[in-house]
Length: 131
Length: 113
Image (cartoon, rainbow over all chains, first blue to last red; front, side, top):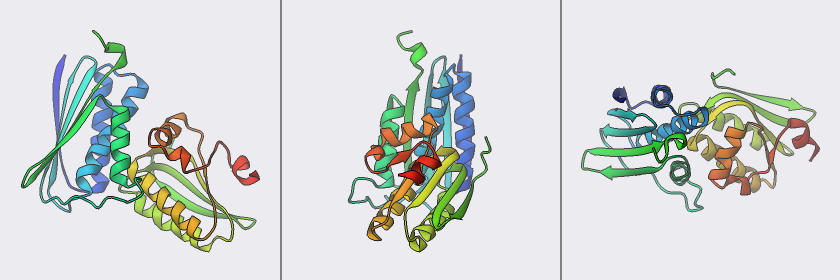
């Protein structure tokens, strides 16, 4: 199986739940177990938080690419973005977000452009590792 | 379990318990911040943060808890987090917050400390 699902939502914190719901469905269809589905749900939330936090308007374009045992999520912000301030104690929300992503997915990254911010992640199911 | 967010503050013999339920994310965290900070500010003793009915937390929610912890420390008070869902404990562990927060598996144990 190879599927792509797109979700476009306005930059609103109360709509990020739609990204989580989509993530759970896509992960489940890709054969992830219950814990991995929850991992991806949280990871996608963190992806959205990282862009919504620095923007007040625009829209989020999320693309979920899935194959058997793996999911890639790309989140593009079309709209203005400013990097939120980092906390000095190392426990700022951005820092926490990175720690969560480091622990829950195989790879994640971000790219900044003049008017676009792109963040992404990839996660493979442990059951499908090596297959 | 109910995913709809809610927060209530209970005064139990002078001990404030902030009972949270549902999903705590960037949309609902501001409500948690308001209730929690208010409880910390008016409590004369430790504040119990009851997360037993919480179904989801993210970095935004953790940020609120850290803010409340710093606020309570400034008042020489204590914040005790009650949590027994393995999935949520895991999030505290991977972010290193188990070093900051005393976690209790039940309200009775948090009160008895």
